Image 1 (spheres, helix red, strand yellow):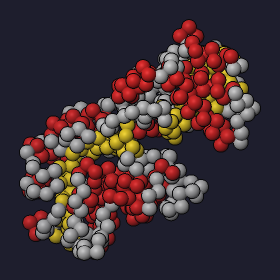
Image 2 (cartoon, rainbow, N blue to C red):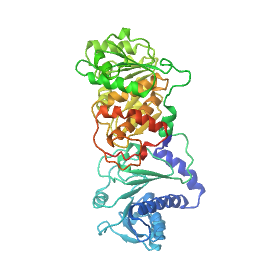
Image 3 (cartoon, rainbow, N blue to C red):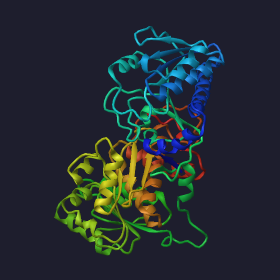
Length: 493
């Protein structure tokens, strides 16, 4: 499990080290880690280190100092280095002195950058907020070489990952001492993230992400004494005469995700059974039988009959996942979930979130999700490339998908079925959401690259459909249970 720490939390962890270590020692630790990653990146991209060239973009804060110290260290390995000072009068004094003493060249933003092998972004650090200033934005816009960012890509908010103007888009980001929320919420701008240890002592993180080993260990598989009932029975209310595919995709995902039993209640029994004959299907909710969790909402409609069905399901004493049309109905009567004693998981996309609250999630998606979960006493999953999951008590899981291949019609129906089946198997709603989201995103990435568990194969990628995603779900689970990290996959879209 990976933890992500806010800028304030990191500064608090740095304070005792800054007080106990010699002046500048902590900065040089960070710079050494940055220099090590830059050297490795030069070697990977050009075949060597000595004789290569870098340009360092230096702002006025400590990140500029980190970058200058790193460049001075790389000078000792034969790297030609130029430092572009955006605010010469505010450049880190000791870092600049070390850089010039090592033979580094100093340039102004208006100077010709040439063609460096790599550019190091040291413009702003975790204290920075807002987009790049015009002079910095103009400089970054001229860059053609890959960028390695120090701690975070400049112009991206450290705590929310939000981008509201010009910002660096890095190939690699070197995180100092701790991962920050930007590294998961703003992953598209961070590129590959490398964490370097600088000796921070950190407590439990308020934002966490499950890794492949966590997901694989949590996935329910049949034990020696299990039968179809003991592994969890999930009930699915999805689909309608106009949208039968929602019922097919949701039940299909539930069948694929676990080895228990799936019950379907709705008007699409023929279509569901044609695709998944192992489902027990009925058109009458009252005859569906006992379940350990319900999934309700995908494609079910929003008429009076759907409203009555939602109320009946929410009156049950088992965990319920509400998605899609169910959320539209719920927006009209939040008390249906506020008063529940059993757990409720809501799974909106941004538009459905706005329908529930009257406002969109905004740049701070974590705060918005956390607030709604607490206000309504629900677990909440906000969909996106970085899916944010909140418990009513405020704990946050994030799943960064590595791409946006699952942004396709029907993919949410598949996700609902996966998570519902995990809840029926006894996994708590927030963890089931995090586990299910990881498997869902990996299935999308596998589908985009044509399938297969050989993650080292240099395959290209192509758009997918929800049906293709579902077809790769079983392979996704197999990969995760083998403990292979989805981050190894070439999944960028």
